[in-house]
Length: 487
Ligand SMILES: [Zn+2]
Image (cartoon, rainbow, N blue to C red; front, side, top):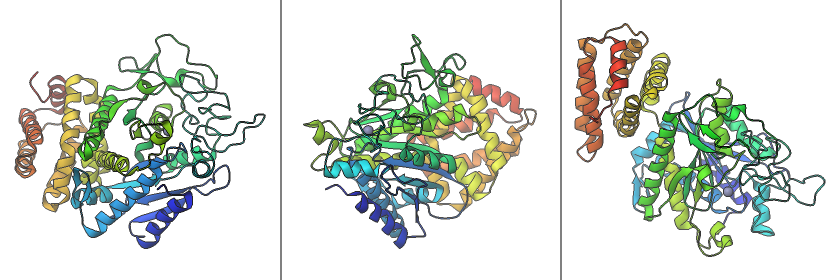
């Protein structure tokens, strides 16, 4: 019913042995507390080069048995689809072979299917409700550290479901990253370009996003930031009304992507997952997904990682049955649909076309800066970002299958990137005409069923017409003051 640790390891080993062109397995730098190896599997197809990574972690909490199985089965589904050119069908939701090809050829998909092998073995043999790793805590008869309280995000601040007592199930450990199992996860975040992170847990049918330790606020970036709080206090934050800052554009991305996961899962067989902040479930610190997202704030040199926690499966019957249902098959289908949707949402059309087709790093960076530093600062600007993120995937799919269109898009990205480098440059008639011609063709090609994208492309076309023979400073002024839809 549930795979043992050696059985999980043998799936990743066989994938890497049989399909080395797609699958690479590496042993992570540290063995578990009890000396078991911990493995990561990477799936990538197509050309070499830098790309966004998506990291899925399973088995952090030992008794949540379903997810390590779901992760390795998901990897097998992707490989089979790619090699045979077959669709992936999870209940009522289908991803075409082309969808899967786009994912594997534009992203690196990383899996740590079983991050806590000691705990899993204990659950499968002697204690089916064990949650932590098997750390021998000195000076106490109680073993184990909660691996989802051990990361360096407000570590040892005992907000909500977080404790400094080794005998609890939510024990933070002796220090941030005191445990080899959590250091292994950190290792991949440190060494790979992980754009999206998902720690897959059970149960509750939730898709969680930051923050876990406090309610979110989007208005005061200065006063309330976790970076200013003391850690290791073994006390709650203790500031009345403390709310953690998150940028409006990141909050928008988290809520948008979480909703898409929820929609994909619902399409499988009607399960109703809820998207919400971690804090809404209960307060926590030191979680892996909040840590993943917090890294770029604590150290601006680091790239941004969007961190999610997925809680798979409903509460049914006993708590034991909820952690390891007699038949986890339908829940695993839901989980795999959520993971596939998350991978899909991590594809960036700019990356795909700008970087992989033409290697236009500078222009892509310029356009990103316009998005993050200019558009993100006003409501109208954020509406434009939403539009682009909504239209991105269907358009990337089109460009991916048509080299002619992709070349034209790449040319436009290059032109736009150069224009936006200087506020005083002026958009030429040729820029506008090339852009509008491509938009018209894309509108025809996306098909009538994609009504929203057609509307979006029309809005972009109208904005482009407004930009004719206008300076970039004025274009930015227009975009930040007037969104794509009449209000
Ligand atoms: Zn858990």
